[in-house]
Image (cartoon, rainbow, N blue to C red; front, side):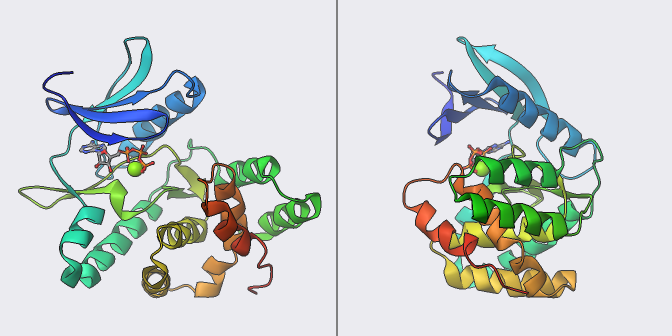
Length: 250
Ligand SMILES: Nc1ncnc2c1ncn2[C@@H]1O[C@H](COP(=O)(O)OP(=O)(O)OP(=O)(O)O)[C@@H](O)[C@H]1O
Ligand SMILES: [Mg+2]
């Protein structure tokens, strides 16, 4: 790995650059099915015509599963937001327009958001009555067939150096479903990152751009928070429980 550059180290995986590719290398305990699902999601999303790094190989490196994709030279939108806070407004508009671009796509073979949410609610460490309410709430939500990224946040957008073309990465959580759920997830991600004001501004602007009411997005918060609680990092759970327990946005 001499000439290779580590881009990110997570609990169960390491992402590094190798020449003009990016290698996402998973630890042994990572579910093989989840890795192959991420590869399949990325391949399906490539077919929609969105700007995503192309998946080049599913491989084994020193006995570990790896996804190898095209390297996009540039900076993440998260980094640009940090470096140029005065341009936050402009970046937020770009961020929202990219999310709406994703939501404007169809990929009928992607997993269904509703199935994933039902599964996560079942897995969540919550009282049976709360789970029952969440399943019922989910049942009442409109099904959708939009491509939902599932982890749409500024660190998953790379602005390519040279021409400024935005690429959307990290399709491990992608599904098809109701776009408001995807916006609710993004809202929560800003909050979990300690950026509550930015979360509110995002929500207002997303809803304006998509011509929907913020209430419509907020109705998804208990469901999305419950699903997020399944793999919550220490410290996140308490915050998520606040949203799980807010039951009457309507
Ligand atoms: N194709 C790529 N080209 C350039 N950089 C990349 C590429 N893929 C990933 N990176 C860099 O590596 C980082 C982590 O990659 P990615 O988001 O796919 O992993 P992750 O483990 O899902 O991270 P997280 O779950 O925290 O979002 C990105 O934020 C980006 O800086
Ligand atoms: Mg990421």
